[in-house]
Amino acid sequence: MVRPSGSEIRRLIELREMIKVESLRLPTARQRDLLGLLERARPWKMAPSPVPEIPLQGAKDAARFIERARRRKR
Image (tube, rainbow, N blue to C red; front, side, top):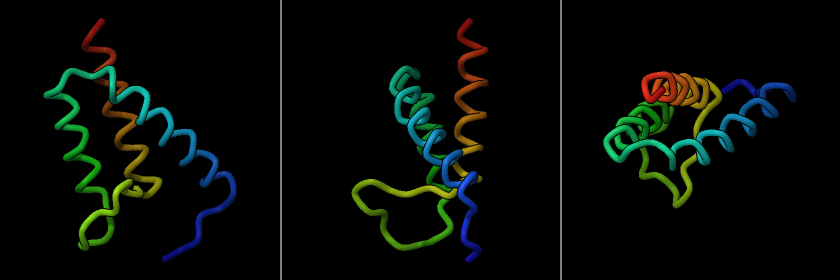
């Protein structure tokens, strides 16, 4: 596994925080869809930890998902 750069780590932290905050604003059905997307993005197959980690690409996918949900809501 390739170690992410400092800028990638900062972006991942920003995206994770945005996902946590914005996911609570989504309707329940959309929250389930988002959780499914995040689960598919996990690069490992073992049981998740209490607070699952997601890779940068998974966070980017989740951020795009939230952006699309926001646009539909308006």
